[in-house]
Every structure is written in structure tokens, then in C-alpha cells.
Length: 216
Image: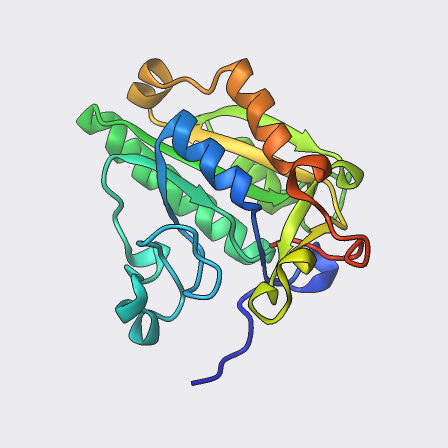
């Protein structure tokens, strides 16, 4: 069964791609991240994940769409399609889940990877602001585009040496946490430094022919 990639429009910062393996391992060790909220059987890093096509992905570990899924207490990675409508809707959904976690006294953490849509009066700025301006945002980092990489969205069709490519855009790493998570598992400066290194070109082994790859 063939289907098109689920990435956002290239003009918005990327098509389909994934975070480097070093990012998943760093987040797993530091925050206990064990699930992705936007993935597919072709690029998932964990046995369980959320995806847009639960009807065909369920047998491969999909729990269905993030927008219909209620995650358990824990930590999750969100690397959505780089589409402003999707990012804005994700921000609304996360805010509702975090508010519910606050009322229940539960720990819930979302690590969000989105383009740094910070250009004044830019068409994507409101979506970015909705996420970055959340009262639950405990950390906001910016990765300059020349200093970090993503995994090519067609990595399954390429050799291992062709997997990582330099980002075409600055990236925002935003951590949203419930009150209990922020108090008990804060995203500390050493954790931030490790996450930056995990995304770095030197650490991901960017292939010289893949300098125009982009993430989503």
C-alpha cells in the first residue's frame, strides 16, 4: 500500500524527515521520552507512536492520531509536519492535555521540534507564537540551520551514509511541561547542552551530498 509522505510544505521549512537517532537516545535518557506523537512505521524510533494513518499503521505500533489520543503521564517527542495549521492545532491539544495533567497532579512533558517561525509579520508566526507562548513552556532553544541536521525522509531508500542532511532552516526546540513535571523533572541546562550536541552536524555524521536536506 503506497501513500505520500506526511511532511509539511517545503516552503514552510521541510518535507518528511526525522530527528537523528542521537536525539531520541538523549531524550530517552534525560527525560524518559518513549513515544513520538507524529511518526510513521518507516521513520519511528520507538515501538509505539502516533501517526495519521491508524487504519494501516496499527499493526506496526501506531496508537492513531495524536489529536484523538490521550497520552499517559510521561514524556513525548512531537516533530509534526511543518504546516502552521497542524502546529497551531497541536499547541491547542497540548495545552488541554497539560491543563488536565495539572488538575490531576500528573507529570506530562512534550518536547516539540518545529521551525523557528520568528520572522516579524511572517505568515507562520502566529502558529509558532501559540506554541512558544504557552504558559506551560519551560524551555525554548534555537538551533541555527548551519549547525544541525535531520534524517532524510527517504532514509529507508538510501544507504546509511546518506541518512543525515543539514537543515534548511533554524529550528525551535520547545519543552512544554505540567507543573508536576517541571518541578520533578526540570529540563536543566546540562540537558539542554546534551540535546544541542545530539542535533549537531558533527554528532549526526552529515553526508556531504545531503547538505540541502530538511526536517519536518
